[in-house]
Image 1: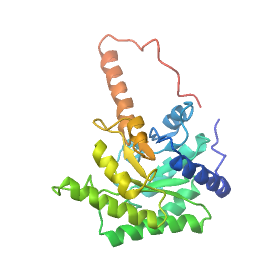
Image 2: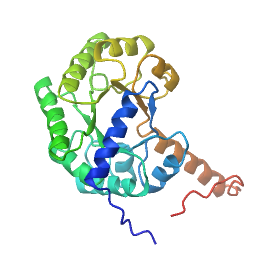
Image 3: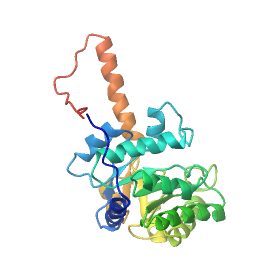
Length: 269
């Protein structure tokens, strides 16, 4: 029986944070396949190419029956992150949405459950409020003696409304530079980024200082790497791929199907 006894010490989290920061800074793009529970985390952690584990907030919320965007209670989200950190031996960077009303306190608690980095969204708040949110997250890490790896997310593109795209890119650059100045390690600019937009963002924010999402229509990880991007993640898409497979299986079994012979047994604990 797994008693989930091996809780990560603050020392371990501090070591993980250093390793995570080095992965962001390395010439190779950090590819993270987002997970949402211990069993998905273990499947991804056991792949030879996996260097770090990233949670998907939307996917964790959905797995508990909640919608995206801080609808899941923070205690449940932190408990889910802790269960993930307990079953993998890699740095874990958590999706903490907008910080649940207090980014500093939420980061402190995330460190307590074993996270060494996080995404925190600016939710396109006014710049001063957004900068204060990121500053609080970084300070919380320092207070815990952890160089917490903040992937500061700007919603400049995804909440742009009808603003011209060029204006949104310029806003993302302005915000990104401000977050790096507060101690963020990287700036996450979700949205389907073209080659030119990516070049503009890297020129404006910095080499190995941008994180992107690999949605349909985006460039490949290798293409983003060549443009100087630090990290690529996939948000709730891996969970949707898994659920699509489950749906297809269900359709087959409810018809005349059988469990496919090449099915691996991946749910052993």
